[in-house]
View 1 (cartoon, helix red, strand yellow):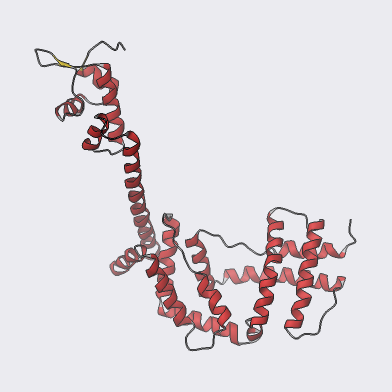
View 2: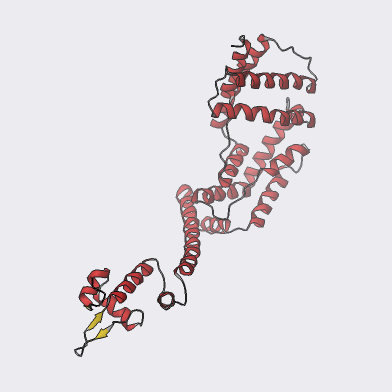
Length: 330
């Protein structure tokens, strides 16, 4: 293409991918004017005008307005400034689309009424403070009317949803379900009964006591080490596996003093029995998840909103490490 040549509007349309009427419209609107007009009124465009029209087409496809395009072509605004503005607008549009998708998904899942749709739309538009207040009111009601252990209440309240500034549709859907769950009076009553029974019957008072909760906190880094080792495929019979098994048994024998139970010596038999209990724990965990109660559902939804999948405890790996620790070191 010669930089000194002039091209009729039909050629310009073919080169730019615009229609003849669009090229004519941009000329009439003063966006890209022809280089010359023949005595017969035919518009002729040079290479520079064609390049500007190609830019106009690109910017229009990105939803830029004519005034913005004029500013860019006139040098009053840079392409970077235009892109920054449109990125912000696009982010807002995407957020609105995610919100709509979350509400529509909830409608399809629940076969919702008009009143429920209005409520769901309100839920996704809540501020951080409103979400916190809703969760606080939920736990206040759940723990009112019985002597819930203070440490447990602190832990329950600490597990709360934190919706990010730019949530995914899945996070919004999880928040809608969670907000509906914590707003449900029947769910609140059911969870109160569940936690009351867990904390006040059988071994509940001992397991929720401060000394025992201290012991559980001491076990956390050992349990995390086991989960890390399982995730990294560390062999249970490796030196690292034996080290974690030794730490777990040392912690477990210390727990007996907290429970006011006669100490059990660290023997191969005890380690094998503990390994068996680990496998029973894995089976119990699977059974518990199959019959998910309101508390389990609450915690699962909190994880979904926060975008943090709960990590499963590595019962089987720890059981294998305990069994391997009985054998002589290699």
